[in-house]
Image (cartoon, rainbow, N blue to C red):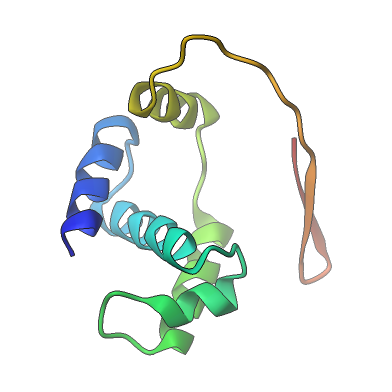
Length: 106
């Protein structure tokens, strides 16, 4: 749980979210790193807490459905966590389906 608490404290400095959203995001990041997959169903089975995988899978779905991501805050978090000598801009487009709804991120 130490990694989870450290990650929560780091995220709390840069993201102006409520405590439950920060904890959920920290858990999601941790299980993605541990499981080395972005598949939410698979990642939900690698939880470091006592929780049913189905419950956390649904929690992740609700989190991504309702959370607003301020990309300026996310970029500040990344730039402050890692020291960069040089920066290269790389664009990537991702398209997900949420039911019949398209989610496009560039």
